[in-house]
Length: 556
Image (tube, rainbow, N blue to C red; front, side, top):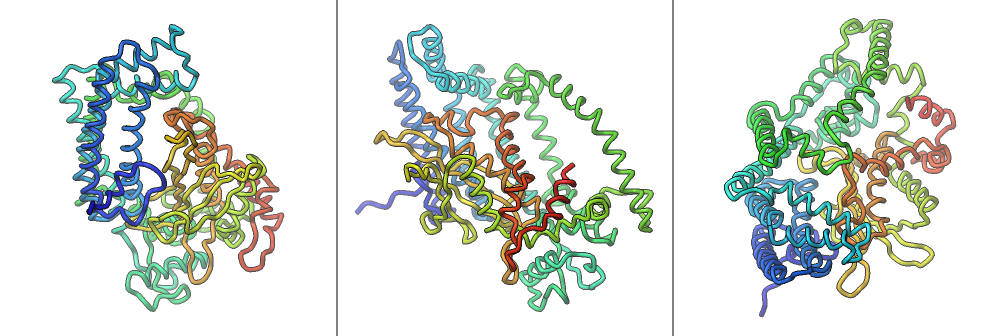
């Protein structure tokens, strides 16, 4: 009887989340890397016999190796971001060096590099009909191998690889320290005066956190209330807490994360910067910034500095004027910090100024932006703009957490699937890293049967979860963030390129990659879009016209 295949070896289709235990990862990665090493060696041996290699002879076997590793290690990296645990960290740190070594092995293969250069030259000479995507892929692959040290001599290459492995380890430790420090800090507030200026939704969330921490009697009205450094609690607290000392305490804890004790990132930062500079010099660059720019649109560090200066000149005077407006408002309202505004005062007084100038209360708008209603508005917009339909497909894909949802994107004309995506919307302090992001699960490509593999995206947010029977109620900024990340997702999911190395977001330069996301978030200020989706979660009434006008006025 044969033993079941390790799920990390599948390398295709939707990952079977629920099966990727630390033990499975620890057993699967070495086996996968062994198989890929053998496949790469066979590919190199075959390439060495070719005088005039073709695209299929070079790129198809290479893609097979790259895709299997991207799929498996992508699953592990995804879990590190959304389901971090001590056991997962241990197995990740054990397997990461071997993964980095294989990437070195792949990126420093001179046999493969020679074949890629031959392909590129044959295309330029007209011997091979290479389309634009193929030419771009070759340029990027060759540049990537050069940046991975393919041209280094053996001794330099050994030093380069050791530094790269160390940098990968330091990056992981850095992220873990930030996650740990964020989850470790909390402040239990027991007195009503400490929360008297906080909106009800925030008190509900803080009371729920207190109950989870063992204070079973906690309620939004009577407390106690537990503050944390996750953004659904920390952000509104700084905007609404009228007590400066409490704001200062929370602010210092937030900006000081991972700066002391066992999670101190100072030595890691110093070593990362030192190693990056050494790596740049090994590759023939003066600075790491020049290495970074090799794959971006900006031509030089000087161009970037010039752009920053062009932005600074008009924005700094405007910022100083706004800061003076905040000081003036604080003095008018009798605040002791009016003449010496500190960083922890700015969010609070900015909110007060928005209220006074625009009569806009960010938290008061939450009831009009329940998650389901915002999704309906977003999906309706996509149907109008791109002639697609987005359908809930809960239960059709294995999930990594009960809060995650799965959706399919279809072409209504053909009634055919185009893509799919996972949505993981809520904050989970201590196991899910902060912020919002989009990542790829599956990339559009041709499969072995000649059909198309539909792209699948991960869409990750960190908004307030449902509390006490109410749905997840979003701020306007939460909604804008969701639209932003969905813009990235659409660029991944609606690609028409069948070559995975150039499909979706692949080969889009980092300094161009925000275009689609910025485009989508601008629709949050489009009146028909907002008025169609902003409905009160209890009454169903639309967002009052006056509130939309306040949002528009406060945009700048």
